[in-house]
Length: 327
Picture 1 (tube, rainbow, N blue to C red):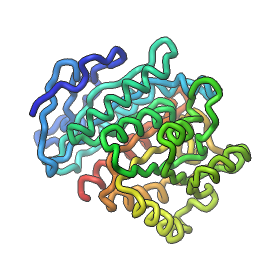
Picture 2 (picture 1 turned 180 degrees about the vertical axis):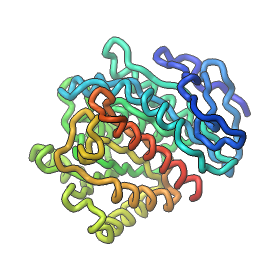
Picture 3 (picture 1 turned 90 degrees about the vertical axis):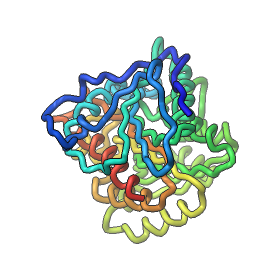
């Protein structure tokens, strides 16, 4: 079966193949040599057997939700910077792993809701074609769209959300959504939510958010406990959560990391978690074979230092691909 994915998206931008440049080799030793850029308005996406794994990078060029939430705007430009860094890395992926860049969904005229609707449709289409999405944001409002797309494709499955974040993002919807409301919106739309949040900073979440988390039976670990030294306790909670759901969607908010690792974010963390525990937990999630979708959000290149955050985002995306292709 062959099919075009994007036929009516008004906010779609095709991928820019010129971003992927650098040293050349004859054996695809760099990721920019392996990645294949598609224009979804023109190119046909082929159905492939499940044993051939396909991963699609896409951008969410939107920080309207961050602006509404009074954060530092600039994350809309994050995916373009990440793509360039990502392509420069050495390629250790399996030969039969297909790596695609399928372009971006952008927000125009501050119409966050339209951008979310189109991203949800794109996520649905990717899953329909057996393609693993890795979306680079943009604000965390992406999660409302991302989850909707997954749930539309698997309506009868229990989808668990694992969020690496300093914030619950469970704020009540006052008038319109923003980067602080996505998981509350998910809970209200689907009448329930299976949600594990890793790295909560108590100083960055008002008491009402802890109350909402309790009411929704959200599981969470605070930042001072989310460390490699507490790994065994974290692993027990993680295993229980994964075993209770059919599939897992991972979202990584870069502002959850200590600003020492990730200075280029919408809302920097004075404490934050470190890279080692995130990689350890991500590997466990991939080994479970239940991970089907991922995104990385809130990277703001306007405030980055020496591409430090861009490199971390790129390596996190690469790590998710490399670990899940082995599962």
